Image: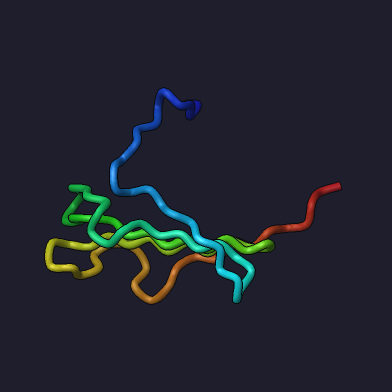
Amino acid sequence: ALINSDSLQHKIGCHLVFVPQDDTQSYAGTNQPGSCSVQIKGVSYLMSEVTVFADSLHSWDRGYDEQGKVVWGEDKGGYRFVRLPALP
């Protein structure tokens, strides 16, 4: 199935605000803690942190229960996606 604008839904509180990070020449974005409410298998809210570098993207997503305990996602750090060279 194709993804298009009609199949997407805006989730209030889940948007990321990106801010330039001069010390690392990157942009870092996060949503406000507790603002991205969900009701998925014991998860009360989601927290996302993304940093965009010239050569990579770091993404750390976690789900918390009502007591603030991580119950979904990586608890020690996120994933790093590295840009590959362009194909000929």
